[in-house]
Length: 358
Image 1 (cartoon, rainbow, N blue to C red):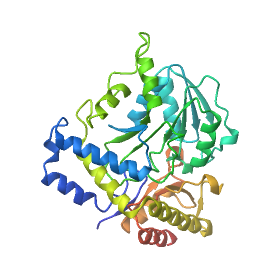
Image 2 (cartoon, rainbow, N blue to C red):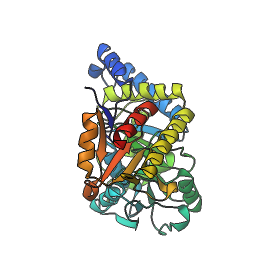
Image 3 (cartoon, rainbow, N blue to C red):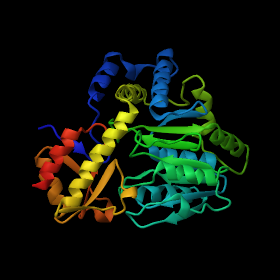
Image 4 (cartoon, helix red, strand yellow):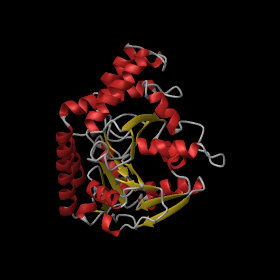
């Protein structure tokens, strides 16, 4: 029996993924050179579709990496000379902070307990922090920071570089890229693809910072996928090293599918499905939403406390052909996580809730 995956990543594949993959195989795209005109056309098409979908201006370039975790390192090496600042309220925002420490940056942290969110008014960015690292959707705890709060914070600190981790929410967040210097995601979540590629969006201010740091003999911005090298190759829609050509092609096709649906429709559908799930959790005597404050509740990764052991519930839904995620880390046995990505329909969500109600 074919299962429907409500896991927060890897997640359910988008319905058109197999079709696009087959086309790529038929056209032997796995064998073409990344210096060929065919590849440049593929890169340009994916770039065009992502720009339309996410409303990315020409001031920003779009690059492809091996993962979103790689982008954490690339951002810190290329955009931070001394100090970074991190809002942390879960395991993945914490890992971004840990990367900064591992790279010997002076990493400032504003931390809240699992399940709590941030508003701009309560955040004071340290004077000498160069990069402000925000997480739109904390995958581990099901907490979102509203883009409007990110934009307020940037207006308060316009001289600092702002980056947004939107790994488990893109394309849902409506970011204003005149205020956001860099953002990134990976393809195995809301874009409905297998794991194996990260997407990095960065503007000319990030590039200028990297070029300045590159001149310092006492500092390294890395050797692999440095921002100046990525940007130089991007001018002709090429990459420094051989990329995942297959996934760049498929991502462009899925982004095109999203554009045909319309980003406004995708966001509305996401909101409606999330509302249905939270309403179920609030009325249930077996579940409850983990995030108590509505304004912080994720629309794309919904976390629920369970009265029964989570493993039993996960096993039962799996027998019915529906796979939900377990809680993260220490909360594995007392929570489930339900991904609400474009690949799963309202009808599939309803079927899951009927099964959970049993």
